[in-house]
Image: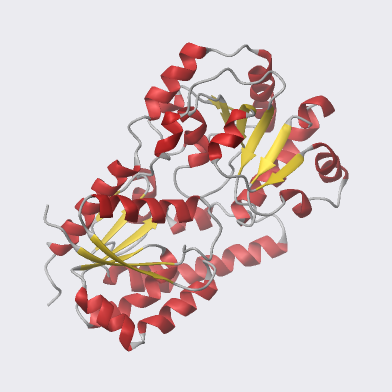
Length: 368
């Protein structure tokens, strides 16, 4: 395919934490560069959310934005919060692909609605989807998702969804260079997440209420959380929350990832709601560490990968899977097999898929 000049806009720039959202944007763009394309990157200077959406709309009104868009062969909007740029891009005739990654309808639909505050928040998010998904998104020439499931959810709800393709996530390539080692017997159970992200805090609350009461103090002391923010602060006002706060260690953000996995006996990923395919489930398999997750954590993964995961769909099932992981000796053959299963999930593969989506958008006829 011929090289392209790509104007890429995203809310996930260097001003944001090095989370899964930012890693996808950084790695997909880097893969496109390796494939010979030229990237002109614009990072919206606001945290992903309402603020970055407003900032994106303001940036689109500047002459600099228009000039950069006109110089490109195709525009890549890297997240849903960049969609306020669409009216200007449509006006000046720019071919545009939107990398939604996950289905906003799926994510909002799974939001908790137990308390009045949660119901109000979920209802407000659902209302915001109407102009964004039914008004702005159909202006694009293409849209990409992280899984076929996400694509299908939106296809059933968006009246005029642009041509939609799947661009899968990749696994950090240097993790495959890590020598497979036997986990330390006294190693921790690592739990990696961006704790400033609401769905991850919801997962923590589920663990506190449904899983932790079924585990002994000794087991809970083996759990160690990693990532931006401290989840324990979100649930410290009741007996269950105080117990977990006292027993679980929070290590904060640690780089490189291999350092986290080297000291881990295994990985826990009690995902109850979230975006896309969870790299927190895939990456440990690349370094040969066993993983306990939920049914949600396996979403979008093929059977060849889910066969290597311990899955607990309920609190009782998750607690049992954790105990099983701790009780069984390390299986070197299984670790190697799990690494092999995720070996095809490279960022270069994702870059190739995105390249195809960009060229497909260029082939879409302009609206009359």
